[in-house]
Length: 163
Image (cartoon, rainbow, N blue to C red; front, side, top):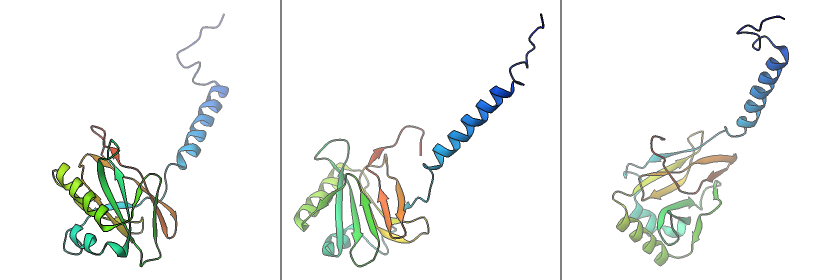
């Protein structure tokens, strides 16, 4: 009877084909998860402030998202009406009037240590709009839909150790 060496399974052609197939399948499946993503860039305040956005609210399509619980706003999305670009999302809710916008801004500022205004940029650094976020431990993802549309994720908690 032939003894099986340490490498006996490593040289099995069927096992290699199976490993290569699994690796190939993993690459194919994961490639759909990678693509042209946008980014958030901190607005320095020199170009735009939350007060200016609030005063000129009619120039934007505005949306808000709750943070953790319903009625706890964590972010605002400002999509300029004057450009040909669009921000889309799944769960952000439309703000219809200035009074509601003021209430949302006040709520975010009252519950947040240091709310920040961000520029939303596409993968090619084209400007798409602004995002005002209260929580600092939040993650937001953006992804290109087409040449003029960017999808924005829901507010997601940042996990410990993940940036």
